[in-house]
Length: 331
Ligand SMILES: [Zn+2]
Image 1 (cartoon, rainbow, N blue to C red):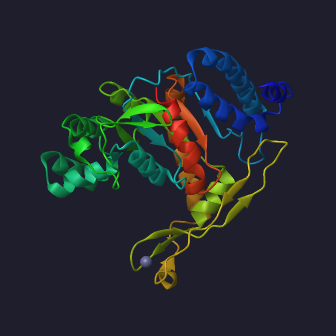
Image 2: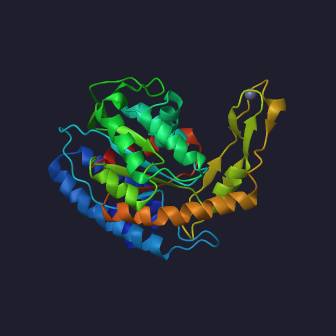
Image 3: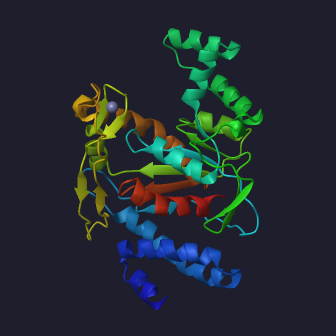
């Protein structure tokens, strides 16, 4: 503890980040007595961390957010079960869908992409599907109320609970990283809500208990998007970007290692770059995302639900820290 206090006092914040993480997790699993002692230390360091993040500047990409930081303090007892109701946010190319699916599988809850729900309705030719088809064919956006009522029906009819998630095993309750998780009624929402209005409508019938905001440095994000390839034979998605950035002690930027994913044999000669994966298009896409998501992030940050999480490596590197961060921040 003394070493940590020393580090915190000397504002050696980057090095503290991992300590803050491990301590806050350790403290949450210990007794309430030690937890209260630990939490003041952790809180002090988190304050310093936020101050540091506020000061930190990285040329070209703005402030560095740190490995993860939550917008609200969470209190829980290890004995009470939590039903995960999670929203995933993140810019195009960050790997949101992949992480959302993996976390849903871990928690034993369905992964829900609202776009898929809409497409399904259209495919099955339901009343709502026909309505949606008519709207989309005119080039208009499906109204928020329509999307929300679809989602509400899906969740409340129990259809969501019947959805199998990537082979994820459905259990009544399970203990994950010291938290008791109840799968039934839970979900991971991928890419929805996208606007504050949608978030407000959602809150009228669902109490989301975590909003995970995935973040990747912009220069890395662009390089990653430029590395995207598709296989014209099997439609598989691959990424050939081989990304490395050294840590920067001055700004506190963490080291980033993202090795390419190997393309399976037989696909190699068929992989091509998507036509819209040019730097110009990617930058525009990111700009649109930022304008759309900033108010939404603020809305959830003010609600104390937002968890900023910076991706610094591949999925095998990220999941071991992302998973406990999710579990320990479910409100
Ligand atoms: Zn292929």
